[in-house]
Structure formats: structure tokens, C-alpha cells
Image 1 (cartoon, rainbow, N blue to C red):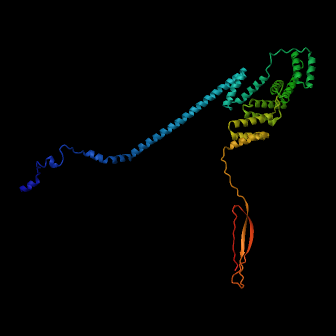
Image 2 (spheres, one colour; image 1 turned 120 degrees about the horizontal axis):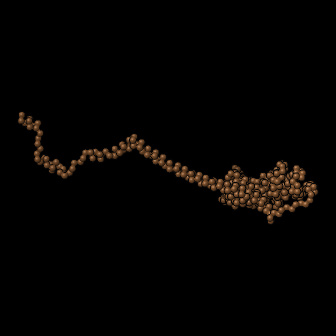
Image 3 (cartoon, rainbow, N blue to C red; image 1 turned 135 degrees about the horizontal axis):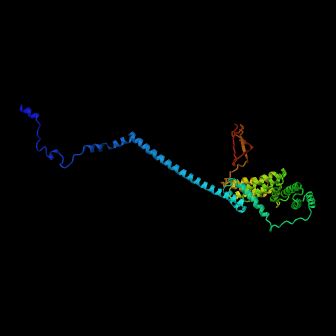
Length: 410
């Protein structure tokens, strides 16, 4: 009974068993923490799990989207900034041209056509399609051209009164009109008007209209004085509307003067106006005797030479062809060929291709016949009979072929 009780009681360990040496470890060695050990053992798995979680995926996607949006926004901002800069520069240029245009109009109103011409030429050089700068420039060029040729040599003298009576002036004016001396008729009629403005007013006005109209037509069609002719037409228009023929003459003179305004400086524009005149009056000549067609052809040539000087060879080739189409000129053919070669550009020198020479070769086909004579002698008699049959063939090869064939006859 006591033995069974001892078995159920806890045994007290002995002092030797409880010593550190008996336990097999040092006293000072700390026991590892279970949490640290478990964490170190499951670290990589937790990170992979975190990256695979839906929240992490959504967060990374949002971050990548933000980066893309930021990059696209930066690129769009740069493009918009460049466009705004270009638009600002263009707007500033347009404002400056508009300012110069308004100043040119003010100069024209003030009569300072020289300064107006400089402003309009500057605007035309920057933008030829700016508003109506082309038309304004033409007006100024016509005015400055006419004033430069019509400047008086000295101060204008006061006209002397004609002492003849008005009846005599009237008859003298009629005689000048019949003789087609338009200048003398105009001077006489003006003297009559100064002597008595009420003397045959309607008749004098009609004669002044006819004299001014006819002198304007004469100046344009016969003398090549286009500015003076236009001035006469303008004065005649104060007495009544011009007829269709006078309107045609005025259009011719204006086209010629428009072409002169662009002569040499802008040959293509000059050719445009001269070309219109060529279709109407190709033989219209200026005071120097140069016809409208001559001006047109020279403008085409100037344009072609200008393109060639700028290295625009293909455009120059087309321009030279237009010159030749307008009028054939043999002296331009070498230049035209040179421009055409320059348009083609440098090309490699082609290697010579050997040409096949047809040679006459004779093909000899010998035919030998051996005859055996069964006579007294056992030795056969060999009688060769050779027939040469030449056949002429044209072959591209340089080596003649010879095909001998031996046909023994038993």
C-alpha cells in the first residue's frame, strides 16, 4: 500500500539533476524568443503574400497610372507651351505688320508716298497676302513713278491770258480738233474757258472731253506714256463717262505699270501682270519701245535665272521650259541642259555592258568512207573519201565549234 502511494507522489529531483552541467547548457545563454524565431522563419512568405494581396495590386496600379498621367501632362504642357509661344510670336508679328500698314495709310493721306512705299514694301516682303498690301503698293508705285517723271523743272509759271477774242478762240479750238492736235485744242479751250466760262459751256465741255480722251488714248497706244494717258483719262472722266475703248486702254496701261512695279525685284509677279496684258495687247509698247510680250518673256527668264541662282534646279528647269514655250531661244539651250542635269543629281557612272558580236563561224563536218575490196589481197584497201560540208551559222560565241563524225561503211 505504501509502495503504491509512493508511485502516485511527484518525485523531487535530485540536486545533481538540477545543476546546469546536468542540463547540458550554459547558465548565461538566453533562451530564444519564440516570436522572433517564428517571424524570421515566415518573413519572405509574408512579403509575397502582401504583394499578392488585392489592396497592394490596386495601390501599385493607381501609382503607375498617376506616373503615366503626370508624364502625359508634362508632355502636353510642353507642347501647349510651345504652341502658345509660336502663337504669341505670330500674333506679335501680325500686330507689328498691322501697325506698319496703318502708318503707311497715314503716310499716303499725308502725301508722303516715299515713306509709304518703304513700309508697304516691307510688309509685302514679310507677308505678300497681308490684307490688301499688294493693291496699296501698286497704287503707291504708280503714283511715285508718275510724280518722278512729271516733276517740273522749276516753279510753275502763271499762264498768260490769250488776248484773242473768244469767238476767235472758239474757231481755233475747232480747227485743232479737226486736225487732231489734241494738246493745242485743250490749251485753246482752257484759254476760252478762262476768258468766258459761260461761253458755249456745254459745247466747250464736250470738246474738252473729246480732246482729253483722245490725247489719253494717243499717249497710251502710240507714245507709251502710260501715266500721262491715265491722267488724261481721269480729267476726261470729270466731264463724262469713258467709252469702252478708253476703258480698255486704261486697263492696258494699268497692267503695264503694275508689271513695271514688280520688274526685276519680283519677276514672277511681274510676269503675272505682263501675261494678262499679252492676252489683250501683246504689241503695246512703253516709251522705250519695249513691248508687253518682251517684258513678259524677260520676266519669265529672270524668274528662271533667280531659281537657278538659288539652287532650285528642278523648279528652274520648269521655269526655263516656260521661257522656251513662250518663245524659242536657241542660246538658252546649253543653260537649259545644264539645269536639267543638275535637277537629275549626281549619278553613278554605269559600267559598260559587253555587247555580243555576231561572228561568222564555219562548222566543218568531215565524212570519211572506208571501202574494203575483197580481192586477191587479204589486206583491205582503205579508200578514204572525205566530204567537207561547211555550214554557216551566226553564233554569239567567240570559239568556233568543230564536230567531226566518222561513219565507217563495212
